[in-house]
Length: 205
Image (cartoon, rainbow, N blue to C red; front, side, top):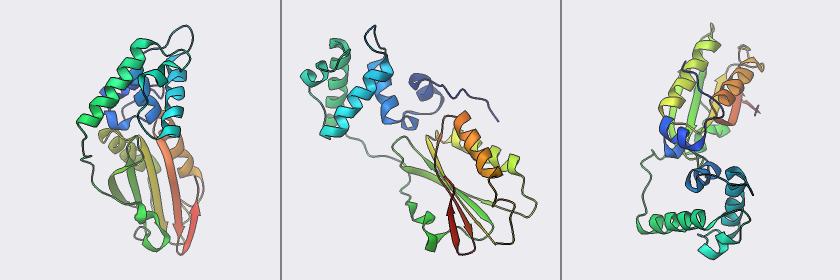
């Protein structure tokens, strides 16, 4: 499996995956570009994001200039980006998937692992199923999942596994731990890990 730094910066992340793989915080970092002596770019993006989430609408140039450490050039780039986005709204080309697959009444087929790949806005963009045989190879399965995540430019991941109660290979935390460690390595957020043992649902996130 291709190695990748968990500290991948926003611009490199765009090049390696896609812009949809970035969180809101990372998108703002990419737009602002760099920080200054007053504040690093990560702090500036958090301040901008806090105002955006509070106001729920694009900020004005003067509102942005009131943010400590945000200079005139960065404020101008942000308002220009907001304006351009309003002039050319786009529709996501991602498949319209719904998280209902993870509801108890619509759990995966028995002996199946389903994983849903999410973009930076936590929108489902792809879903895949993997059979879970008795002789389950955790390493191979993990490699398959994260190889596909990298191909799809994943920012997040949700996993659901349906097993008969007699099959305890995946009912312990070893596979969950392996998935979590790999998600951290590849800078992918594990947003859900659900195990179904017959009619019993366990959320192991």
